[in-house]
Length: 170
Image (cartoon, rainbow, N blue to C red; front, side, top):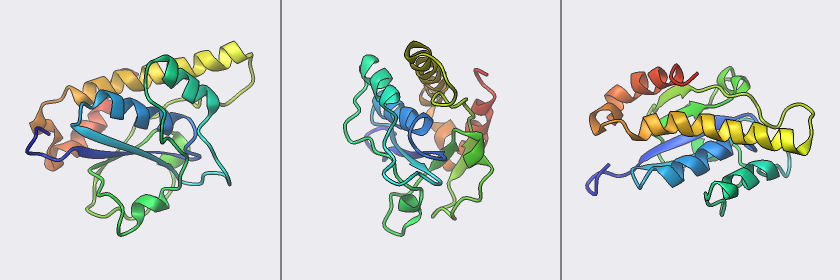
């Protein structure tokens, strides 16, 4: 993860790929300083699914770029020409319980569950606050991930390290 190492590819999965996984993708790409390349996908995004507008607003308010963010199926990342993933993290309980595709290279996997900020009713301010809280929660865990020394990010260690972080900050 220095100039001699390629970035660690991380795929964040959720059911629809509109909120939590999009937040995690944008955050890690902003925070990762070239050591990480984040992607996101959903197990079953709806037809014409788009990133949630409040998620995009919260990211922009935090100074994080939203260009290029789009909802997509995890099938894109199971294709032979897809980028090789080093780590796959489910961020919603539904996706964690689903049967995932067979990922090329057998990447490390972990589940970091977050409540769905787009679920439920409430005022626009309450919904926006739910997205802010989710962004903050994801950011805390990603801060721990990116601060890990290079040896903890080697493939042999990545599985246990990522799963240990699932217990952190919750």
